Structure formats: structure tokens, C-alpha cells
Amino acid sequence: MERPSRQRQQERNTERESDETETLSCPECDSEEIVTDADQELVCEDCGLVLDERNIDRGPEWRAFNHSERQSKSRVGAPITETMHDKGLTTTIDWKDKDAYGRSLSSEKRSQMHRLRKWQERIRTKDAGERNLQFALSEIDRMASALGVPRSVREVASVIYRRALNEDLIRGRSIEGVSTAALYAACRQEGIPRSLDEVADVSRVPQKEIGRTYRYISQELGLELKPVDPKQFVPRFASSLELSEEVQSKATEIIDVSAEQGLLSGKSPTGFAAAAIYAASLLCNEKKTQREVADVAQVTEVTIRNRYQEQIEAMGFR
Image 1 (cartoon, one colour):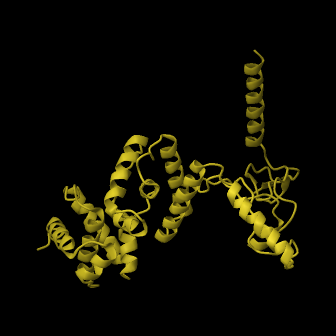
Image 2 (tube, rainbow, N blue to C red):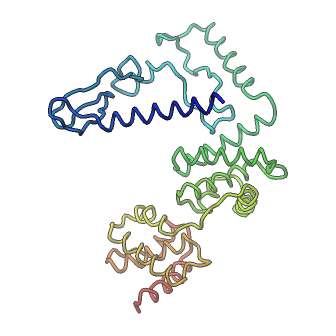
Image 3 (cartoon, rainbow, N blue to C red):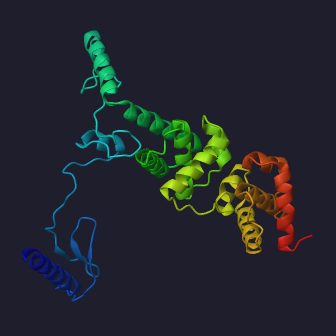
């Protein structure tokens, strides 16, 4: 019986504090434009009077003016991350053979640090399952770096792989195949345009196996992934071809008009985007050859010609 009453009392106190803040006015100019500045002080926006400056500052007591000073003065470790098998909670011994003052270590200390570093790496993984997880997450990190995707995609891919591992979906499949499929699923989930061909280029498994594993884990884990929008590929392809913003907007218009007429169904999004860019470059007098566009989009010239004819007819050009 105490808990509901205590909760009600806290709610009343919160409402009372919010009401006092809402009805607060400046004693100098009677203005009700009271704001909280960067130093957590209540300040009148009209006359600049500081009404309350006793708020608690929860920041550090030290000051830093660049990244290196901030790193050296900080007394906490790196944040928890899913991209490491131990989530970054274990300690690491730096590879630099120097002490806290930057002085080089003696030969005896260097050999001692070498032995400690070696045993530290060994005890970080206690069984074969953790070693496999460590290898899979390192593969995801390697492929993500080669694809140039942001950190958030690596985190999502690591979470998808961990879910697949917990659901025992790895059995009978290669670690590289599942990790590549998890990265491809993360790219689609985060809206980062990377085709299956691009992912297969940086992977160590065939494209057919990646596609098969991706369909399996997305179905088993219930990943709600929308079809890839060809417009997501337009800025990257146009940037590689050094085309202007006018061509990009025209290509986006061509894709929208073609999709409204149902021409996108069953078509490759990369080929559809490449054809739209080729058509837009002709319309905007920034002509690029089909070979140049095909090399950037990693599709064939035949695909561009077929999609180009369909899109031109949809736009009403002959």
C-alpha cells in the first residue's frame, strides 16, 4: 500500500515544480520568458537577469580544449559496444612499450609486457564459442571498414549476429557467411545503400551463399526489412560520376514517375538507379556513357539499356 501512495506523492511534487516553473516571472521586467542556458542557470530572456544559479553541474571538474586533453584527463573507459565479444569490458595492455610518463621501458620490462600482453589475449576468450564470436565480429568490422559504413551499422550487424548465435542459427553454416549476411541486413535496416554485389566483393564467401543465408536469418529472426529504394543509390552513384545536383534531382524524378507506373516491381534497384542517372545525364547535357555508369553501379550495359527504354517511355519521351 505504501508504493502507490509514494508514487502519487512524487507525481504531485513533480506537477508542483512544473507549475512553479511555468508561472515563474522576472522580478525586474515582469517577463515570463525564462529559459535555462548552457550553464543550467535560469535566465530572463528579455533583460538577462539570472534568477537561479545554484543548479548542480554534473560535468567534470576539469577543462579540456581538444580531443587529446579530453582523453588524457578522462577517468572512465570506453563505452560498452556490441562490436567486441566481451562488449569492451575487459582491460587491454597497450602495444606501446612506454610507461605513464612516456618513457621507454627497459628490455626486461618489454619482455615482461610482451608475455602479459600475450596471456591477456588468451584469457579474453574462455571457450571456442567466444573465439568464434570474436572472429565473426572482427570479420564484420573488416567488411564494414571496406564498405565505408558508419559505426551504427556495425553495432546493428553485431546485434543481429548475436541474436542468430543465441537462436542457434549458425549451426551448419559458415561464420563468414552469417556475419556477411548480418552486415547486409544491418545496411538495409539502417537505410545505408549497399548492394549485394558490393557486400560480396569484400566478403570471403560466394554471393549465392550470402543471399541464401540472409533470407534464412531474416525470416527466422523476424527482421522487418523494406524493399530497397533506388533513390538511395542516386547520390553515391552521381558523386562517383561527378554529376551535378540537377542530374540527381532529375534522376530522382524519373524514378518516382517510373515507380508510380509500376515499372519498379521485380527490377534490381541498382540497375534502375543507374538507368535513371544515365537518362538524367542525357536530359541535362552532362552525358555519360553506359559503360561509365555501369562500372560505377556494378551492373551490365544491357540492364541499363533495358531500364532506360522503359523509363523514357514512362516519362513521355521518344
